[in-house]
Image 1 (cartoon, rainbow, N blue to C red):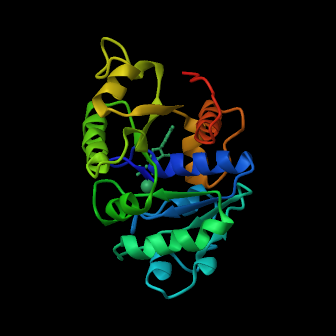
Image 2 (cartoon, rainbow, N blue to C red; image 1 turned 135 degrees about the horizontal axis):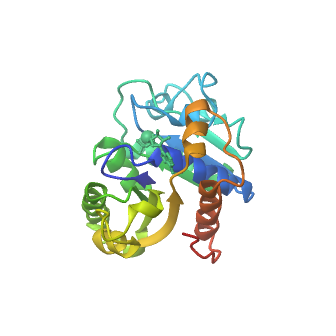
Length: 240
Ligand SMILES: Nc1ncnc2c1ncn2[C@@H]1O[C@H](COP(=O)(O)OP(=O)(O)O)[C@@H](O)[C@H]1O
Ligand SMILES: [Mg+2]
């Protein structure tokens, strides 16, 4: 699952970036957007206008999972179940059943949650075996991220359940004059091991807005590829 506490830190953007990168490594990936009413994955992954059913239809039993799964035309190997345009609380039990049903067909299922610790977050925490905390390098995101990390670990799960993804990082993010001194401060504040550092990228942002592909050489894409490799157990150095 991908979560944040604070809104707008880039969960959906990073979900697609990661899903696309895992797919490029040959993995079959299903990305489920749980942010009811604020859907954006459909646009970023290029499935906008192609979805008939959404995650609420699946969880309520209105349709079988296969009907709501839409392959991304931009990223071969990545498929998406979109969030509903409005309403619908996500519950853990049907979400868990969905994961069981799709497990034979996918290597990774990414759950893109909503900000805060509401129903989508709670349901995802119950069923997910890893939480990627997507944060921006600012004190509010870090503090909220710490609260979220504590909540995830409160059930006695191992510390390694939560991994930190620092997003929208620039050279100016850190230093004596910045609100956050360095990456170590991010790691120490949240108390989670660092998985990836994704740079601020205008190209990634524009691709998300237009539903197009960022160029493979873009630093954010490279960072996404490194993140995917680490999740697959490869040792890849941080490039930031
Ligand atoms: N690495 C990045 N570089 C530039 N813009 C980014 C980056 N990550 C996210 N954004 C932008 O930040 C905004 C919020 O991202 P989004 O993925 O919708 O966040 P969330 O899902 O956490 O609400 C979007 O306009 C998105 O394009
Ligand atoms: Mg989102």
